Image 1 (spheres, one colour):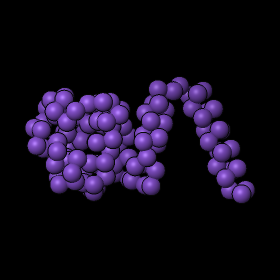
Image 2 (image 1 turned 30 degrees about the vertical axis):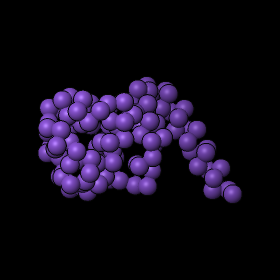
Image 3 (image 1 turned 60 degrees about the horizontal axis):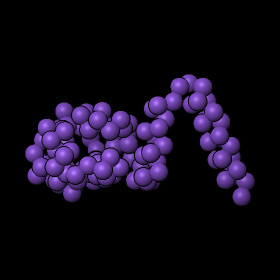
Image 4 (image 1 turned 90 degrees about the vertical axis):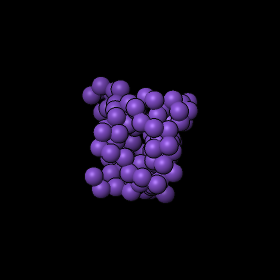
Length: 110
């Protein structure tokens, strides 16, 4: 798996804080040591595939957030929207798409 430890650490820490979990609680949930979790959050280590998968499943995250980072992925707002999108049905997604396209188009006119 090719990605930067920094990106995974940022996503992991933000998701943990959003769920109001302590590092110890998350380490137990992911079945990893507290020191390993701290290393991940401090960008000192890459996760194993198993930990990566458990993390994205537990927090309902997109793997793209970590593997293909961009400027928006560090934003808490971006993460909240991304998680909510996973709860939408197709009709709701179409409304969100049309709204987003309109907002982006408005921004280009300025």
